[in-house]
Amino acid sequence: MKKSTKFFATAVAAVALFFTTNASAQKLGIGVNLGVPTKDAYSFTIGADARLQFDVSKQISIPVTTGYTHFLGKEVGGVDVPDFGYIPLKAGVKVFFDESGSGLYGLGELGAAFGVTNGSGTSFLYSPALGYSWSNGLDLGVKYEGLSKGGGNLGQVALRIAYGFKL
Image (cartoon, rainbow, N blue to C red):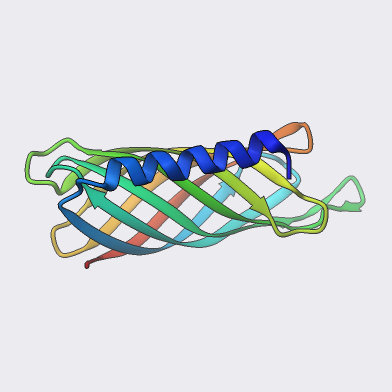
């Protein structure tokens, strides 16, 4: 793994821990992601994630997310493109637009994608999202998740369906 990637992953973890020191509440969200890749070499993406969310206030939270994402390869020009899978590790900021701490929100996360496919390595990962969270724990969001892979970029537009539990 490159030194810059290790440094970045460590910095993301340190920032998340720093912001969560004074957090008042914690939530754990378990979600499923279904997406459309931004490259023609892949037909579909599917994934699952776990998001630990630290509430700084009713409207601002610090999420730390990990899971697994799998891009399904397809045949392009008579050549089968292999599948690509990675484990994301991200931290960010989630802002609710309603003072109640539920409803419409915006989310931005940065981190690293640790490739599990042979020779895929580690990549920088970013993910902006918009979503809606109900007070009963149901969470529905749309996100773009982009990463650098093999000197290029790969991404997906995904729907996330999740349920959150208070800890």
